[in-house]
Length: 321
Image 1 (cartoon, rainbow, N blue to C red):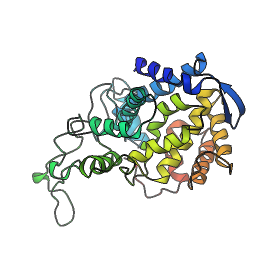
Image 2 (tube, helix red, strand yellow):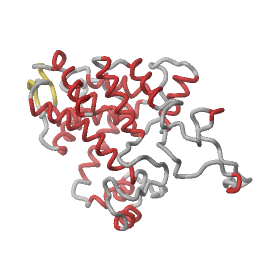
Image 3 (cartoon, rainbow, N blue to C red):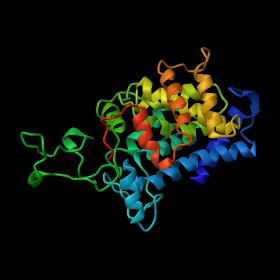
Image 4 (cartoon, rainbow, N blue to C red):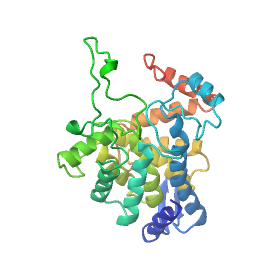
């Protein structure tokens, strides 16, 4: 990974070196050979992947009390928790989630293609998550690929246990919904990369951001490239808007325009209010409001953030698993 990050950053030399960067913090110069820039860009990519691996053992455990009890009884945790509390899928120790595997497909594509190529990226996704990948577990329905088999249910919709064909956690990694729809569109139906995206609006778009920021930070093509990358698997304005919002924040940090996350978020909020902003999206206002909400959570103890966020968003009916 370290070698791949170095190769990625070396690609930026003819693209990024000594160009003017217009950010909320003002116009400044950034060089792709500047040591602090290289360190921050490299750290963004590696931190994304290592952080993902650290979180996988407790992925989708949203109940703070349940998490605390599990970690207390574990030999190690919450990072790289042993034993894992993930009740949905099983990976090897140090394995990553579907998020990081999408990041890796993009990282490899950027290096091999010397920049973003949506066709190469789509091809790598189809291989990385395809029939010959670790994601092709026994629970997959070959007649309705890549969906999981349906467990038989009774008249009330409850699974008939004696006829169950698979159960949680599945023995292997978990394909996200956007990736499954992408595979159906791109592989099964033969749609090209510009039309292969799903109608999914979830957070997967953000996992494309770190390698793109590492390569394109400070260049006007960053946000349009983020949009193109996200729409390969998620052809929705919401997925694009939040991914671009994250890209604005990370770009400020990587280029040094912001010294703290709070400052980077403030710069992003300012940029999202600018009528002349790059890559405008009809849902930018939602992203700006979300960033305003995060600012109010800065002093909330981290173990209470989830519950407070749920309360703030009026998600009263959402259960914590």
